[in-house]
Length: 397
Image (cartoon, rainbow, N blue to C red; front, side, top):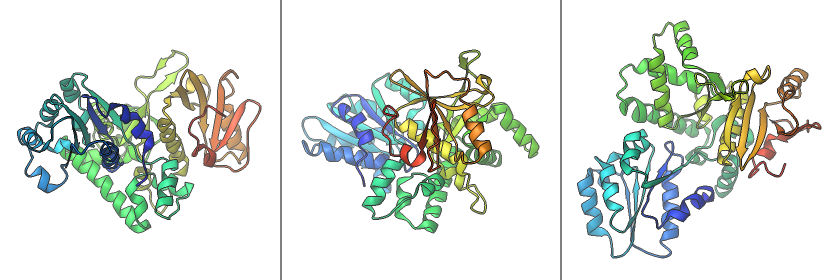
């Protein structure tokens, strides 16, 4: 497995800290690999390391509560600072009590979990600021290129736009890959959501999940989802929809951005734009190979910009007759970004460039498309998708 240096360099400065290191993210995004890579680095200076994977039945059946876990560590650690790695710790009863105790006894504690418990308010409050958290995500394209090279395989940009970046999927042929992704999808929805939150109306929940995940890169409101359900003759209140959307966020299935209004200079509270954590969640729900490359491409650009550490906003339509897909902000610099699969068609060209019309030229305006031709103008920088996916930042454009 490739070294995920992007994340390791964020965590490395805390290796010896008594703060609890929480590594979170959606199932199968590579959290356990991050732990292994941290352990490998630390093992160069000490062998005082304990690693426990609570997805292993032999581990969880013996160390199923905080008392047994603490006793095990006390009996197996060596003198001096001990580095403790607890993978999928949320399986342990009262795990937070164990973690709080362990950090007090010259231990450096690292924990992972994909379950929403791992960062719920009650536990972050319980840790009282004595932790740092790091969110791991599926591969971006730069990582995919490195990993597929390691596997002696290739991954086209189109394949990325359809099937996303879950690391394990690159080990399989297409049929087995789709089976793997479907099983992953079902595990998240059933284990992390339906069982975890004791959802009674599974049919309603699954309908909302399917609607949201296949409608990525679009503006929503809870009311608009309610109206969709009414058209399908399904009962679902706004409060229920809001609650279910919060569950999807807690399981890292979706990310929400609130549109920013230029008129009120504030966020539009009741509206939000949703991006899937991985575009495979959209593609799994498509029929007859009619994949939504247009919206998946915008979703991919979102994921890549987040990886580059940009804060993102969506500029509301009230600024112009078309919203700006992203305002990307970092280090005091702002970039106004439009995403389109292609602007080769005149109508598409006019539509995308018109969105920039009311933005003054003191701001950098960027258009990202999958076209091979350069459509840059005197005021708009066109970036080809294949070039954007290998960029480290937007600073040098």
